[in-house]
Length: 229
Image (cartoon, rainbow, N blue to C red):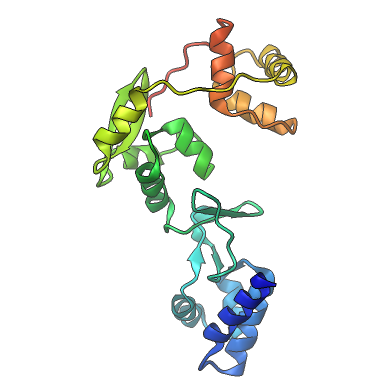
């Protein structure tokens, strides 16, 4: 009930002072959850330029993937603990675009984030060109730690680096998870940790990359995978 009350309140705020066509557009927007600029222009029976102005008034969220093509109204996204909401394959962030989102994820982390961790959170490939920009982004510091580049927040650098030096417990996979990892490794012997994670996930089992890495390392199966990001 609280959810519906919140949506009704939001609808009232958005529709306040708008004409009937705009009110209809807002209601349809809420039903669809996510729309493109062309769809909004069609709902408003307006030009794309006018539709963009309207989206700005409504303070919509813009997807940080899919070339920023999609929009969602405030109150619709259900952001997770990382401030990210996924609708089908479309990703939205409460922090803004992709670079703003990554910067905030680094800022909020206890020990900084490496390329693999960032890629997993925002669903990009670990060798994305984003990392070339990230190393020069204001407020971000990149350093190599145990063979991997780690991105720290300038403001929290000392705190995050200290946390990185402390030992962290990583769970060991269950017997069934271990079998799944080994099966995929036998099938695809040259797979990276990220590729193994994705292949296992395709089988309907989600095993964190650090768990896979710890398992392979424990059994002496961990290959030296260059991490240049």
